[in-house]
Image 1 (cartoon, rainbow, N blue to C red):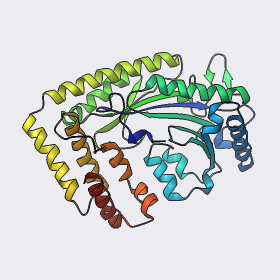
Image 2: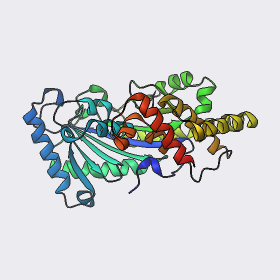
Image 3: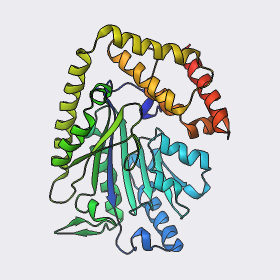
Image 4: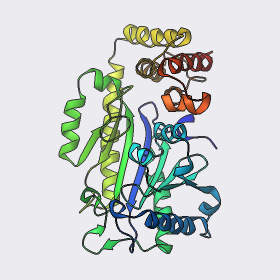
Length: 336
């Protein structure tokens, strides 16, 4: 099955992906920051049994992986594919994931909370992603007693997740808004209504390739439906704003920008991550404007497969300079 970043999807000229994440903890276990290694092993087995021995289609389509047995290049390439968090990859504690073949589903066991149920799809798919996450939540809830308070909702290690435990986010490609200096105003606007804007890899990360994540901050005192509805409204408004901005671009300058980027990528012999992301962003913009034919070019796939650990996952460990050579060669071949 194809990964989320390898297929076209709804509104994917601007909305690169949709992610739903649910934070859950299980009664009878301390919060992860206080768990012993033995606690973590018991937690892994409890979750493994709950999902893989359930009489559901998920039991056959998901696999359990002990992260301690995963090589470093594979772990960090999972971060680059947006499957697991950087903190989860970097931890040296006992932990595991339950993951689908296409990697659209990943349950992190032993992250900041006992469970992080994550569903990610390409394009704008908030309802679909939430429906899948809710099904997984229900299956796990049937076997595991989640820590829940009638007044506070789901109990979480960090108070910012208290309540629904829901983090819904969309990743947007908004080069025109960025180029017009609108990110600061956007951040202030969404913050006023309980949302936040972050870089490509979430909290603490910088923007790259004009990619930004917008997600809800409020999880207490608001329903899951209201959070999703509000995020969808914001996203549709930003889609409209970005498209209007693209329509107003000087056509000749846009053609020059995107075609120069394509020319460099087709001929480069050495290519850094930073330069690759800048050029791919311009190609993606050119595709959306009809300047570049898109049948054989998948910008987001190239962007992800050109990341450092993705390259080392495919070709083996190498120095940064060697990666720059392999990256250039990989993208040249993809664009032939």
